[in-house]
Length: 517
Image (tube, rainbow, N blue to C red; front, side, top):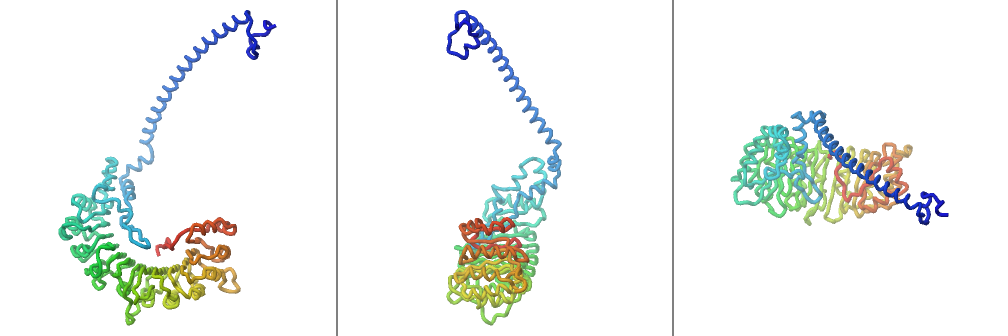
């Protein structure tokens, strides 16, 4: 019966081929084995040919890309010396930018290059011959640098000064302790020859800052920004008072950290920004007031000090008609000195003030009605940003006064005496009974941080109510904890506001707005 089964059908059974079928099966195996060997040989040849073709294709593609680059628009642009010069300039950040934090001044972050081992302009000139031909004769590229008064070689400094030609200089210099005196420093001698080109200057060191200023001329014809910093642990008392004359007709910004300049020896007719940061108990309120009196052109004043004396009662009122931003921060106050900014606030008038920041870290309770509220009443017409952080009482009177700030856009209040829920409820009230959609502080766009922390329900009701304000909804809500931020973002009542552009931000302390004031 098996002999009648075709050989092909046996493949699907367990039956053995018959003697008649076995030769046919053996013949098929032999032919198939031979055919398989032929196919394997053809396949091996195809693989070898494919590999060869792939290598040939890669070579042609690489050659094509190199030739396409010859015709690319970018290559034509990079052949323009002026464009390469701009690229190089953007590789070097502004060396005068600095970070000012609540607790300290930090060395400007762009100061990672210097007249020494790490020289970014020199690195750019080593990219290729074209870049080198452009970089070397670009004065602006070599006019910003950092150096040390005691560095061993003067060659890199002279090279910088030479290549910068007549371009204004921006530099940071570190005055470290070293054997030679300031007068003997070849670095300072080289800089002094180009003093008429100093534009932005950042000086950090010890008492040698006074010697540095004395070693050069009193006149700085093009100086626009000057930062003088004495290290906190280096000196005490009178050694921080720099009794040196400075005449800088174009100086716009003066920053003093840990030191003071004798005010009657200064001639700064165009000063716009004054920053004093001093935790060494050297700077007094009298000094701050005298600097304000001497410079009525001020537009921004920042005082972060630990005063040991107050202002004499017979001091005259100082009017600063152009002052737009006033930042007052008290880290410590002597027992005989009010632990807040009240001594200065009662002595100045700022009719154009737009931003006021007051912070007191003393922990002593002060009434808001003694100086801050009267000052606000005098400045209410234009005030747009108000930040208050301290142990102030009578905060209810401040809450009620907010309705008299029609242009207030940014608000942050922190005090253990503040009832935050009452504050938010007051800000939900309409200014006029017949216009329910015009709320208190109608232009308010940024609020927070607020402390003590308001309840979640109160904050949600406030945000939702402000969304109906006819002059605009909130833009930012700042909270002091990540948990509070997450709770607000996930609340169903806030999701629609977030879709419309509201930002809920976690931040422990207020920061300056993008306006710069």
